[in-house]
Length: 397
Ligand code: NAD
Image (cartoon, rainbow, N blue to C red; front, side, top):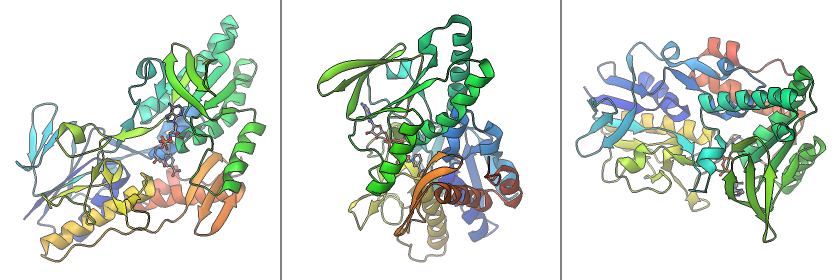
């Protein structure tokens, strides 16, 4: 009998548990650890932050969807001691394992940029998303009482996937809030250091996204490097000239790092991501699997690590679980391989850009693809009932 411990119930951890409960003999002890009783579909956090969806639509109870044979433990992991084969918790308790899958996810990264952690709102979990939604609404109420113009300025720092999806969603929610409180429509400014946004997409699709957002009134500043966040102002440089954008809402979507447990455990890492073997474990500790946003897996085609996406995390969770089953039987492990099902960036409920193989989608068809991906994840990692309750169907808003 072996004890397999999965740390983290995000995309990678939930998928790993689903495969472990299916593939491992009933005599094995399966333990899933998470710091909260709920799983969050983090690819939809921007919708909660913008206020276009209720938090309950993107969260579900972990215990409701795992098999009875899995022991679910709520706890905050502080360290993994690979030599002692032990997980350490903040309350001083420990948990030993024969195999561990570390899937502890990401945190917001401020790159040490002055004022960012004090003066900008990060977006990385359900609480931070709800805090952003509340802050935006409070500022609109504040304008209604004081006529403080900056209360209607919303600044999103970074135009990566998260920034763009959030800005797209804000173009839907802010006009509704303005109507509710009888104020002028808030203005959105999106500040990005790169000169071209969404470089992972075909140029035509990226241009479509930029045009859509600009037509909605978004002030998209590219080639604008942020150097400091002051209270209610973003300092950035454009063509070597220092400028400021003023606003009472400053949202930080400038990048992410893996969980700090990685550095705290002494792993060889970069931004809390560990380069793992093709089998997703460590050469020196084959019983330690590291998956999702805390891992870096080399893509043999590009010779660079795969990007950190939910889709890749899900696949890694599956491979780690299967490889533990192989190891238990003394079989050789499988090399991680991954075929993208497609990449989609949503721009609103009914608009998105996406690529599936060589097919390029924009507008409504791409938004349908996004809904299919969301529903599929709910079906495969939770269950049919959860997909029915939380899935996306009412597409003609
Ligand atoms: P990111 O790192 O992808 O984007 C951050 C953006 O901020 C970049 O465009 C970067 O150029 C910009 N930036 C960095 N420093 C800056 C500065 N000083 N001034 C101005 N701009 C600056 O981060 P993210 O968008 O949070 O995404 C994190 C990960 O999650 C990525 O790997 C992404 O692919 C993934 N993700 C995927 C999806 C999806 O597949 N739909 C959705 C969300 C996130």
